Image 1 (tube, protein in one colour):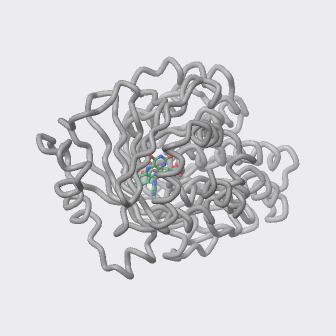
Image 2 (cartoon, protein in one colour):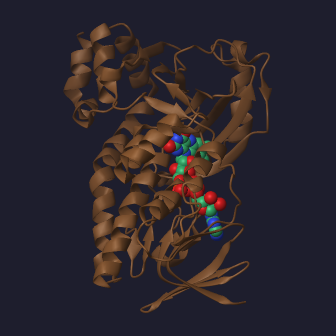
Image 3 (cartoon, rainbow, N blue to C red):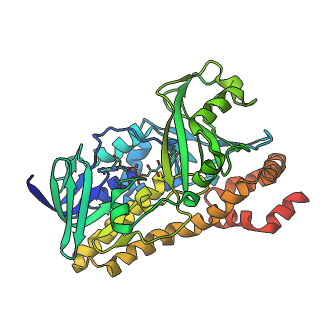
Length: 409
Ligand SMILES: Cc1cc2nc3c(=O)[nH]c(=O)nc-3n(C[C@H](O)[C@H](O)[C@H](O)COP(=O)(O)OP(=O)(O)OC[C@H]3O[C@@H](n4cnc5c(N)ncnc54)[C@H](O)[C@@H]3O)c2cc1C
């Protein structure tokens, strides 16, 4: 097989890899973006795009954010419903003062959204998008890296591992192993014909006592369908010996609030599952001549399970570090540590808080109390709404005084 030479090889063209490549578009560096899939491709996901997605797009450039705002294959959401294990409902309608940008969040199939990002790479003279190119093994030494793929060998000075939850780059170069206490399993299905969806495009979360720590979600999609799924911490899944797919189907047909709405519903393409490496533990996500981004670096929010925005933010930081490496001609592990600092500087505080809140949310008694109390108080609803973008307000959820205040509310 011929050997192709590049300055940078990005393994994986999901949101993390694509954002990193976009950050190198004007660099003049020769960049290979290789993916085992051919885009547009699906990725098993809940399809919810949080505020971090908009943050990452605008961090890249205000024009990219504007393009996303014009992107029609998404649905904007401004309301949330949280259902406690006992079945109480907390509904919050957000207004523009609660979020920056055009909505609280968006929902878009990964088939459409990931392709939106990849399309932005096409035509860039310094970027080679290598489709159906699967990395099978790699080796790194002080002079560079060799990537052995199904259809080519790539020689490069720097490797970006953006190859998702089952990252080969993370396993080989960062000795990553799965720890079920910091990993979740989730399944999702595209479902049509669900009753009682609301014009505000509610994103719905159900805390169920059999699925803890975790939740079931119903997210409406632009095409009249919904993404319906369920995730749980892997250590709890193993302990309970749950079959998540069967459990999801059971809940959809028996839960008193859900089942009546799903009577006429049809599952479009089966129930599919995938892993979520959580950011509740911190490890080294770079080393000599490599960086890991997104799921490959275990950057999924431990409470919400969101990782798209996190992957994109880390892709931005990785691109900045690549430019720095080439400017200084320094690809050492010490130089790469600046990347770890940037990523964890942005995400670690919230990962720590959300790890704590993951445990709070896994206690049915507390969730029953919280949902009932907050749903009855306009002031508390307003406070919860303000937490979405205010990290300091969210920190109050970790303080006993918050719960005491609520008790006497
Ligand atoms: C069921 C489920 C629901 C979720 N819901 C949400 C949600 O609603 N919102 C949210 O923000 N996050 C959600 N997540 C997490 C989210 O899907 C990930 O965090 C996100 O996809 C990470 O992006 P990434 O670019 O790091 O990896 P990916 O999107 O996984 O992209 C990795 C890319 O690498 C390619 N690749 C993999 N191996 C190789 C190889 N050997 N050679 C070449 N290419 C390779 C793949 O084809 C893929 O295109 C969910 C995850 C699951 C499993």
